[in-house]
Image: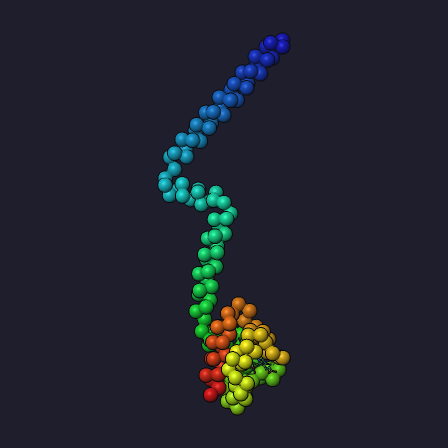
Length: 148
Ligand code: HEC
């Protein structure tokens, strides 16, 4: 009885191993039949996360370059106009030559710095938190150009 059981068990084990080997070969054949393009797709799907985030970083750098292509006028229209077209909270209004020439008496660099860091009712970067310093300066230049 025990011998029969153990020989059946052996057979079962052998069959399991054999089918695993056969299945394995089958899978191997399928891999070989992939086209180069498919292999590339599989490779990119199973690529380590590091590669994926590197691709993301490149995309971020590229979109950063696109963002820095915003003009001072673009930034003004999105971030500054709400306060500087109406004078909210005492904001000097664009086009008000006297108000802006008074501001410029402290020097252009100080005006830039105050726009970047914020001063009193003027929020830091005029709320354009993804603006570079140069972009904030470009928006200031836009306001000053329209206030001569
Ligand atoms: C929430 C309203 C608000 C927004 C938005 C805003 N400003 Fe202002 N800004 C002010 C106020 C108020 C002042 C006056 C602050 C003071 O001198 O008391 C001011 C002052 C300034 C000054 C003069 C600083 C100085 O040295 O006298 C500049 C330049 C300026 N803003 C640029 C900008 C730019 C550029 C943007 C958009 C990127 C912007 N502001 C967005 C409210 C705003």
